[in-house]
Each structure stands twice: as C-alpha cells, then as structure tokens.
Image (cartoon, rainbow, N blue to C red; front, side, top):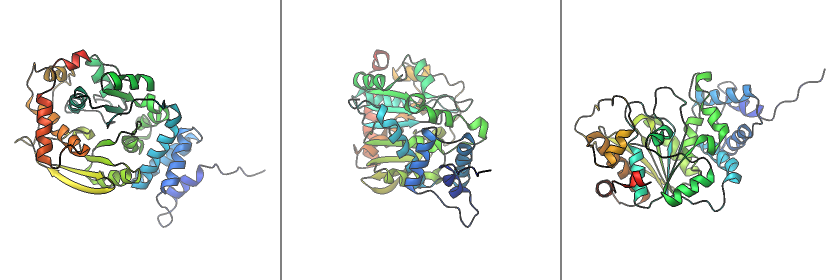
Length: 337
C-alpha cells in the first residue's frame, strides 16, 4: 500500500511541535505562507487546531505576528476597491468590554466630528458577558459597515466606520470563535489587531498584558508601520485606564520609545459600571449627563492617540489638545451622523 504523501502544511506544524531542542519559531515568510494557507482553506481542521495551540503554548514572536498580519492583508487585498476612502486612524477592537463602557468609541467620534477619518474593526460576541462595538453602535442608532463600499461611504460622509471581522476576513472570524472549542484564545486574537486593512498611517493597539508590548512593537516595525502605539488598555481595548499610570510603547518611523502617562484620577480602583447601557455614551456626548470616569477615559485615550499621530510633542500638550477637542465637540453630531 502506497504511503500517503505529507500535506504541504504539515511542515509548519512540525517546526512548532518538535522536541524542545529542535522546535523554533516560524520566520516571517513561513508565518506568512502558513496563515495564507489557513485563510485560503487549504489546511485540514486538525492541522489548524494543532497549529494555533502550539503557537499559543510557545507564545508568538514578533516575526510570526507580522507574518500572519501580512498574509491577511495579502488575502484581503483583491476584495478592497482601489478607490476606497482611506482613513487616518486605524483603531482595532477585538476584546469587548466587561467592566466599563467602551469610552474609546467617543474618542473616535471626537476625531471624526473634526473631520479626521477613523476606521475601527473588530470581532463580535466571541466571549460571553462582554459588550462589543457592533452592538454598541446599534444602540446608538448607527450601523456597522456591511461591506467595503459601505465602509467607504461612511468614511466619506461621517469620517468614521466600523468594519466587523465577518466582512474583513470571514475565515478569521471563524477562527476567533473557536475559543469555546479549543478552550483558549489563539494568536488570531493578537494579530487581528495589526491588520490595518485600509492602510491608515496611524495605528493604535490595546492589549491585556503589558508583557506583550515588545511583541506588538516588533511586529509593527516588521510591517513598516510609521506611527504606532500599544498599551495595556481597559479590558484589553485601546482605552486608557485612567485610574492608573499607563506605559505606552511607540513606533515612530522605525524607532521605538516609551512613555509613562500619569493617572488622571486620584482613586486607582475604579468601580465597575453596573449594567453596561450604551445609551449612557450618547447622553455624555450630548452633555446631558456628567461622568467623571468616562470623560477622563475619553480625554486620556484621545491624548495618546493624538501623541501617536504626531499632533503633540509631549504628553502634557497632547492632553490639553485632547481636552480641547472633547470640550469643543458638537453635541448634535452623534444624532446627526
């Protein structure tokens, strides 16, 4: 009986899964090829699961994360219209919120209301008990982009769009929803933050663990991102935890540096919001309700984003710019949009 030929993807599982003395990380090109095969559905389910969990066990390297993100961009590219409106800011949102409302959404709205184009993208509902951007937008009377053309129209009209992963790359949405099957998050939760689907010149990442800052900055450098920042955000999202100091790691024109932003509130332990009612975001935006934590989170988050974009040369100036931007917002913009 003839021997079954080895599957082309098997070599990548073998690289990760050999004994302790022989296993290694994938190179950028190996990671790029491996993820492209997964996205094109050229792998067996057993291979995909083994690959993702071996990566989880080893912890992904910057080269691997960058290779996976590049492969995703490669596979997506043919579907993106050449004439699509391009944003200035790329703000990924893949964690969902559990303790606090997504105040960073108001930071994005504040930029958009000033005519600065913001593309958000993310996954919906992969972890129970969390509030995601898609359902938040629905509560505010706004729609997710149903396709690339819709995203372009929203960027042109409102200067803001949110593209769900089901539109960006349906295969990745399937993989990110494997957590209940595999029992663990996979590298998909990490590298989707670095997709930057529309090539925005400014990219912001929020993560759960400060120990992964170097992984993200290393991947951003490998992807030639020119203005990038990453920090441990509230709930793993790109939102300042304003009750505590915040270490932000940047990439600017290929160089890395860090800043430690001071706490904005005297009390480090911020009480958990009760029921996460997205309508409170609209009330705060319109000035109908004051919310000390929420408004501090918006201003603090905006400050990091503006500093990343190069609007300010230091943290203090960025904070003043952010405060002015927030206080000068048009209360009617959210309803009008």
